[in-house]
Each structure stands twice: as structure tokens, then as C-alpha cells.
Length: 108
Figure: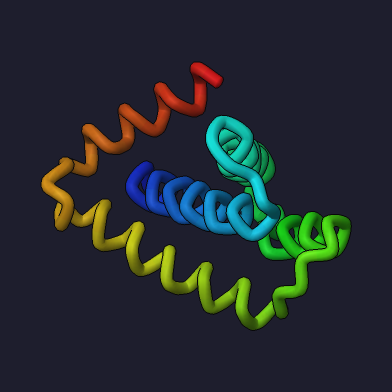
């Protein structure tokens, strides 16, 4: 990652992917939010961590049948969505999004 914008985009993508994965795992409400946040935080702490493998392991442990290709497809969709949101398409400035992300990661 080369900038705070890249870091914020990656964190947002991981959080969106985590929420999708939580849904596949049957998690709801606070449990789903906690799973998604834990995935995003762990990935931020150890850059290069393989989020797809982590999700794959969680799916395997829970008996969720999803291919790695499907996980990668969903991850690609969320990467595009995160990029659009971070570029201002959502009406939120990049700086404001970065501050909110930092607050959310630090407060958990």
C-alpha cells in the first residue's frame, strides 16, 4: 500500500468481504460486525495476510461450501465498490473516511 487512501480502501474491502463471509457463516447482528471487524483489523496488523485463506479456513471449519474462485470474485466486487466509495462517489471525502476508519479500528 502506498497511501492512507490505499490502506482505507483495503480495510473497507476487507470489512465488506468480512460481512459477506459472516453472512455465509450464518452470523448476524453484532456477531457479524465483530467477525468483519476482526478480519479487517487482523489484515491491517499483518500486511500481506491472506484474507481469502482465512475465510476459506473459516468456511471449511463451519462446513460452508464456497469455492475459492467465488470468494475471489466477491473480493473483486468489493474492491471495486470500496474504490468507488473512497473516490468520493458516496459523497464522503477520502480524509473523512480515513478518520472514521482509524477511529473504528482503534476503538474496537
